[in-house]
Length: 161
Image 1 (cartoon, rainbow, N blue to C red):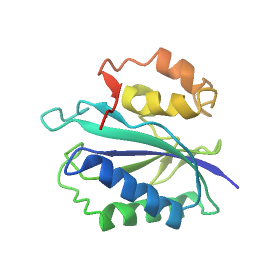
Image 2: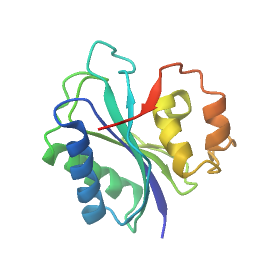
Image 3: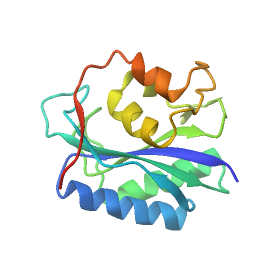
Image 4: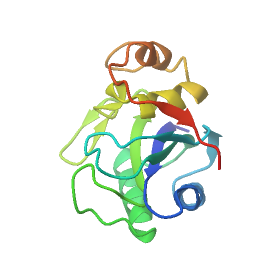
């Protein structure tokens, strides 16, 4: 079964509760979660005038095709109350597809691996916790190597509830 890596994030409301609800919905709609990183807190990236984010990376086994995964995670975001108002804006939940096995895909709606993951410490740190030796199929480097060379300087710290 293909292994999928997802990044969960949110910065509005009860952030950890939204992530927990997303995990339950992903397990039910996408496939069993095999690994979860800790929760990490980070200042907003891109549009920085907003509350700090909680982020978490999941490894999920799925029988769904990548486009079906995208449809399911978009539906989960909508069910949990995500409203898309501004690019990089505040949100209750965001679910990004980071990797789908070693697949390289670029379509109008979906790019795998996620095109920005190697530039974002808030993505790489939780990913390195659960899959440090995973090799990026385009860049040819491990997640651990990408984290060591990440240009992003935002602090990412383990979240204490």
